[in-house]
Image (cartoon, rainbow, N blue to C red):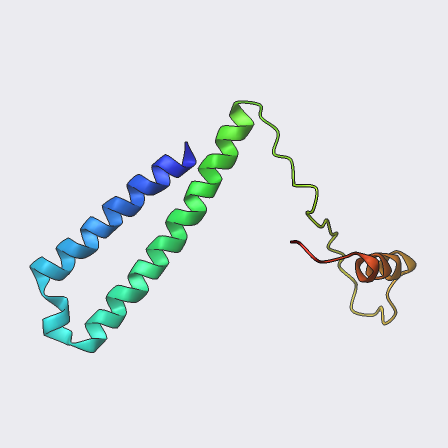
Length: 108
């Protein structure tokens, strides 16, 4: 579902960029600068649509009660924040680092 919506939005964006370049002549008015601006807008739009499609996919999975299960080779981790006055990591933090060091990171 999310992939279909993402593909449609990419097609709309491609059409708008093509229309903008053809009708307004941005590249001919501003030269290379106009092309760079259009490229940066396309990168921004692509990233926005990518994340929007991922969110739609997640919400669709939650609504249809399908569990999102990581693959067996996925590495889990825990983010731990420390106060500024702490200089030594806690024992739990050292244990996590030792576990990560021992884990085989080969994903192939």
